[in-house]
Length: 255
Image (tube, rainbow, N blue to C red; front, side, top):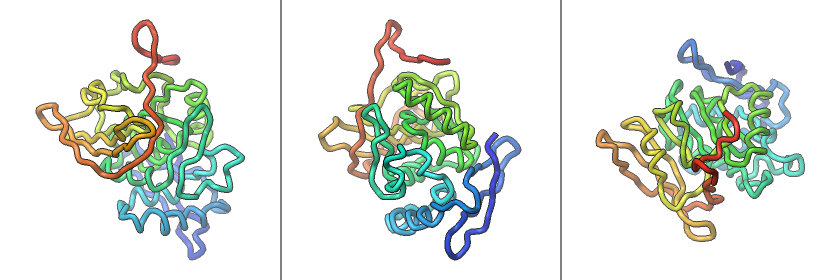
């Protein structure tokens, strides 16, 4: 269970206001103390990078103000934690720029208590944003070292996220169906398995395209007939979605 921490947003943005618990089983959480030295940088990030680009969902904005992004980047990049660009996190992977995280979260059209699957845990930052928003979060990372690090980090910071090392192409069938699926790496086409694991009316936010070639962030909605209706949202540049290889086609290294 995530910890519920609330404080009033002051003039110098030294702390951030919290969200109320919507149900007894879902709470928002924030591990940052009132004396957090990065709170002012997060407030500036929201005001200068995110709101001007038409991200307006108050739940998303509050999570972006609360979650300590500097905890999710390598020590050598801490001074760039709140800059609006991706940062390397090792193993050829990156943490997405803050605007993209906020934009994908808003386009998932979530409400507290929704079940969300994230493909591509990375450092765990997107998962932490979703958890802080009050979602029930499952996250898959194909690099086992990153999965283990993210799981430990999220636990240390108080975010209730289920993390699995495995092949995102296969999703998380035993936890399905999901209200939304967010994919933070780019396949060339939508994996059909992920479509199957969406509820009717569920949203899929996914970048599509080859690495080093134009990619497009798409928002898709699953119809009652099981088909996706998709719209192009933004040109983006994501690392490729890697498909694991093993005897059974999976790479679920931990249960």
